[in-house]
Length: 68
Image (cartoon, rainbow, N blue to C red; front, side, top):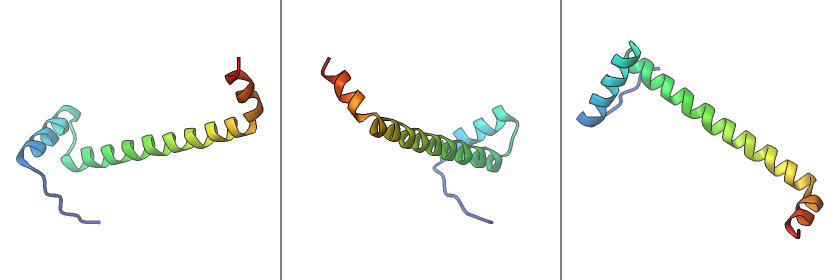
């Protein structure tokens, strides 16, 4: 899918530097950054769901520990 992206000159310079460091195109850098961000958010949401389920299942234990 084609997409236009408007960047400030400063951000474009940073993107160009990242691409040069990685030996990749700007498009590849942007795609990788989006993928990495998505994975972080997805992992954070998974961890939050798992922790909530853990604490909900052990609420009585958590209350006893709090009162110590």
